[in-house]
Image (cartoon, rainbow over all chains, first blue to last red; front, side):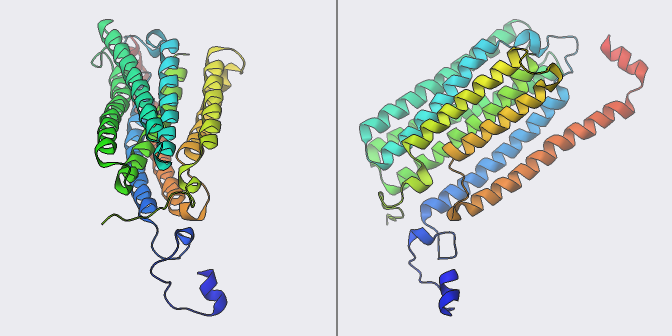
Length: 214
Length: 121
């Protein structure tokens, strides 16, 4: 844009612009940028859905109806391990993306396996926490506080489960189709999804567990 | 049919980050998580200020995740992402603070003290 104005040449930009000028008026952005942008919009809408449940939880967190409160239920040591699992799995997911871009396939598969194991451990810990709470009579039907707790944390857990399924699918696709452009774009979307889940977990950890256990 | 949209090597560090940026992000995130647990479990902070402290730490950590893991930056090809993020933040703020505000007023205005005592019982 600025180059055209400087030379007084107001002709349309050339259709095949270099990727370096993408986003600054130099023609269509590369597919990879557009796909990441579209997926980012989806992630933001997902975060807005979570914000409704966060608001519900914040409103109802004191309404224990005589039942157990967060202070009695939450075990912060357990939650700390969950947090570390999810954080390191986000890190190994990033390493997997770096590896596939450099065509280091062994590194890619190892990183994906670590991501899966850490994500599955997170999910296992969360399910054991839920089972334990329900066994102690603190299921989702006990009080408004517990209903909102189970919907908020459970929805995050469902997202993690979906992410694990997606990861398995993408590893199989990489193994059969190779590190082609469309496979790497899908892997990039998966990594954005996985990192966004970690961001939601940070909010969840702070609002639900750290503030609730005090 | 395949579109070779991004030849690797040329500017692969721009949208994807590097090993160093992921590692720096991980270290920051670990420090901030540790600080959150510390603040909530000890008496380092003045007790009424703990929720505010936790909120600041959480927002800082979300920023670290956005910059180092999701690679939201101020670069020229990132303008659309930043604008979408700003709009998302606006909606999230409206939903959360609006709900809390309205429900707090409902509690304050519509609950007679006797009914409140009934609920407490």
